[in-house]
Image (cartoon, rainbow, N blue to C red; front, side, top):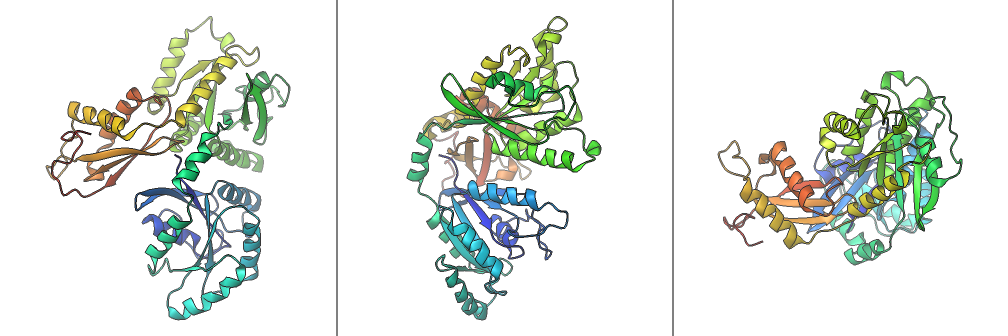
Length: 453
């Protein structure tokens, strides 16, 4: 089951980012009195009463951005709305109902999604009485709270939980076999558009030897062996200091947006060129969003006689050690060589990202890993303990470990656990999001290595 998503929306400067930080318990989003500080979307995973969900901060609806990024901000807002299971519509109790609030309410009412109205900045009883005016928005009774003064947080969280779709609804939604959306990213002139043309067998993209021909992200829907899928072509990227025009700036943002939106990422390299800083920045961005990724080495016909595939594969592994699970494909887009095999493997990654493992099997795997290699002692001379594990989501496969002290598990040991999971599970080629959460135990023997899990 994927994690339900909650998008926080509203006009500028009503305290959306403050509520986001308040719920997360961390200062993640920038909070400022200047309207329009939040431009991109931010997400954070929360758990309440055993229910996990993701909250998402968005930019202010209706803002005129000082840097003239209105169009891009609006796209981010719409993506946040489209991908949400619940919309938390925030208004400002001190300002009262405004014309822009009414505009936002009209926009949200046309969307077939549950909406939770939240009146923020209710710093006292007088403000709560004034908040009754928001009933006229036609979105039900508002939840009254104050992020700044920490008032009624539990009521807000409980209201969010009550408005989320049930687990049965989410599971039913996932039964259908969705079409895979994959994105091609890489530097300029590595052959991304040529590759899409080879896949769809039609000249849908403008293919040119002039670097930078594709200036926006373009979606192309096609079928392979009666299976529908969507390919997203993106502008070729170059180093940050070389981004001199608005086209380059927006191209980078749209490529990043396409990565976030895609199910699988095909990271395309030119076999005749060395790995660059741009390549490393892209792979880092892909990793940070836990996206299934395949390294695609294009124009291999020009290199095959001079270098075995093993040498290029070793070169990639050396340059991207943290992407050690990513499969590698050697293709020639111009002739279509190996492109179908590449796409079939991409479909496998898509299916792996939607896979699940039973809780008993997961705990058995981790128990054996801990017995074989216990976590090192913490600074307080006590060994950190894991009580149990469970998979709580897909795309990416998300596994939570309940333990006594999450901070005591080093990055090295977390990598060890991820390595064991990747080697033991059916989704070993896709990134696994590992979440360690603190839980107190009254039973000193309730640990994986000592239990019969």
